[in-house]
Image (cartoon, rainbow, N blue to C red; front, side):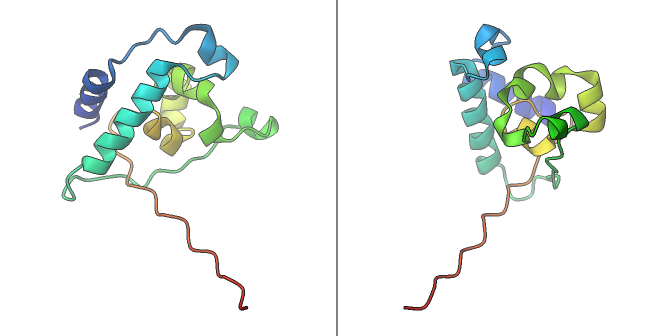
Length: 123
């Protein structure tokens, strides 16, 4: 299923591995933004009967030591995630990788639950 998802993302977003220096600087490129939008669109349009995985978003030890969080680390989406054998084996930042077009083989992350509403103070 992920291979089909990846092919769809590739076709929809004009997927390119040429992220260049912008990825190293932490500045997302057009290709990165296209991958991210296409992945979200595909996940939102998936049929309800499609099996999905409850994905975690656990950083690795390096990230923890540097106070980095998965959903704010674009370098991971272009150079780590599915591109790095150790990351793929450990599935670091699984949800963020998936949501940014760099999900692990076989992963189809379920939609994240919306945040709980904040109670309003009585007036």
